[in-house]
Image (cartoon, rainbow, N blue to C red; front, side, top):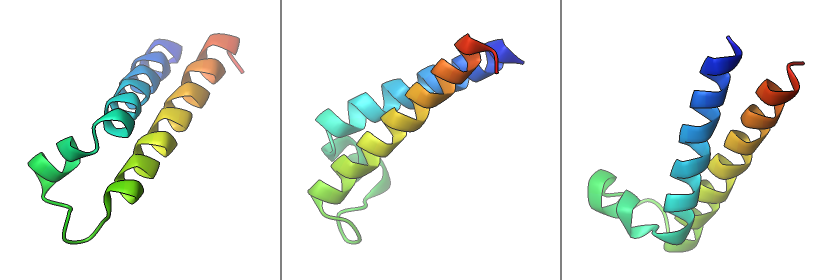
Length: 63
């Protein structure tokens, strides 16, 4: 169970880091520029990174 949380958390964390530094990736694959600005895409990356970090910390502390 905790290993699955670590894997999901790391995927979300890495995805968040990539999206926050390169928001054009979301635009390239999902064509979101019609709906979101580049700043909003960056915020999505920040939120994904925070969620991933929280999942990793919870799974490491074994709450």
